[in-house]
Structures are given as C-alpha cells and as structure tokens.
Amino acid sequence: MPPFTSESFLDQLIYNQRRSIQYYLFFTIGLILLGGVVIVFAFLSPALFASANIAPDVFKIAGAFVSSLGGFQVREILDRKEKIQTFETFKGHLAGLKKSPKSERTKTEKQFEELMWKYIEKATLS
Picture 1: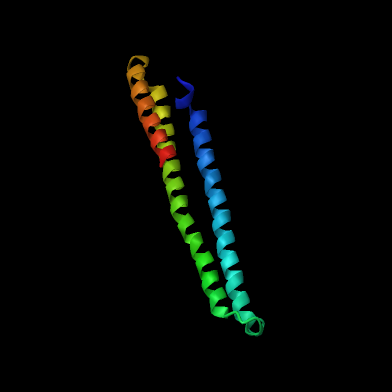
Picture 2: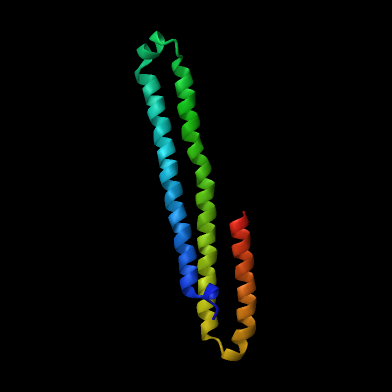
C-alpha cells in the first residue's frame, strides 16, 4: 500500500491533531487565567487606580475581553476532534481493506486514496 494510506501515516495525522488540541487548551487556559488576573487586580486595587486617574472599569472590561478570547479556541478544539474521528474512521476502513481479497483491494485502494487526499487537502486549506 502507498505510504499515505498506511496506518502509521494515519497515526501521525491523529497524533498531530491531538498535539494541536493540547496547544489550544494551554493557550485557552492561559488567556482565561490572564483575564481573571486582570479582573481580580482591578477589584483589589481601587486605591491605586484612583491615584493614577485610571478607572478600574477599564481593567475589568479588559480582563473580560481577554478571558472571552479563550472561548474562540473551543471551536478549533472541536474541529480538531472531528478530524481525529475522521482519521480514525479511515484507519478502521484501512484495516478492513487489508482483510479483503486482493482482487477487490486494488480498486478500493485507489478510491480510498482519492478520498483521503481530498479530505487532507480540505482539512489543510480550511
């Protein structure tokens, strides 16, 4: 079988998606924590803001804004999980393909190969 329809290739694609999810989670948690720190800082130090003529509301809004940015990452995480499910489906199909008779396998391999490349192309361009 060609290397791009091998189980190791699919395992690598799945690993890459899981790794991306980890990065998005760390980034999201960092943004939420940063926003929380800014909000807490605004609530705990009104005297500092009064002397500097800075309204604590500005920091509260800034903290809420930074925290809400973390919510946008959730969509990316869900997209990555969907890709993992698709690659795992491809992997299961590949395992079934290996068990099929050699005469049927050639045509199915080509169809499977085309389908995978279309999906990979779509996934990388979107």
